Image (cartoon, rainbow, N blue to C red; front, side, top):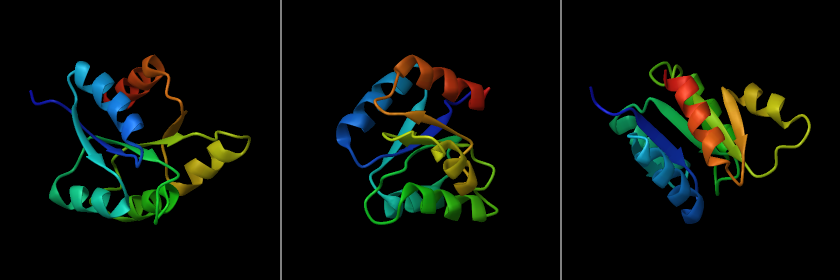
Length: 122
């Protein structure tokens, strides 16, 4: 069986690195995009099993990118977990309204991240 593919859409290298190290150690294949354009190109090239989406991306926001992904019949079934530094009251509903299946706050609790990823992939 091949490894599950996770697309990490995150503009900050340190955040991508932490997520990459944690998820690769669990046997996942990790794809990385720094912005919406890269993420869309990767989606065109091959479908991941899950997307970790930074909400505060440069250019097109993670919320708008999530809306685009969920509006596409080829991609709409892929679970998207929002990564956000500002999980304030009401934002969970905002992320869900955009199409995110769940969210996790930054700085990322790596154990909680693994638990959440495994919840959606198993």
